[in-house]
Image (tube, rainbow, N blue to C red; front, side, top):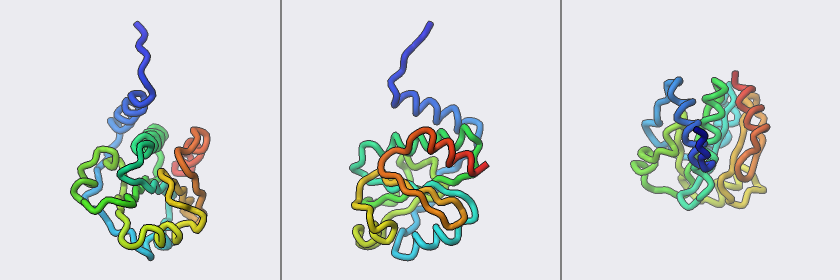
Amino acid sequence: MYITLPNKFKLSLALLIAMSGAAVAAPQSVEAFDKTTWNKLVNDSARPSIVVFSSVTCTHCPGAINKIAARLAAAKSHTQLLIVSMDSEDDEALLHDPHYASAARLFAFNGSAQALQYGVNPGWRGMTPYIAYLDGKRGVNFVAGEPKEALLRAWSAAGR
């Protein structure tokens, strides 16, 4: 018997299968993302990271986060997933949101959203999901929207 599943169910199923073999602990706190956070992440990280900038009104963000988490888990990558909420003021809601459970660290904007966006990338105008790949060597690659599969494979392979 062959069953066809919609893509959103395929992503969720892939994430569940991938996470079943890995010990993934949901973030225990929400860290402030202020004017100094971005530079610290770029300059202090010794390992690759994928940073997803999300918002509570973003309909594509949960799917992008699930896809990235599933790819990292399936590749057994050591690339860490960091999620930044741009507009939530409810830390408890963020901590209990299942879309953020796969994050190694969870942040929330603390300050002017426009100023923080400009500090990350002056060309970014607030579109979400906005994704940054930090290579662990101070290099940054930005993607507006969901990254293509080939790019995700490359990013996850770099963390092995």
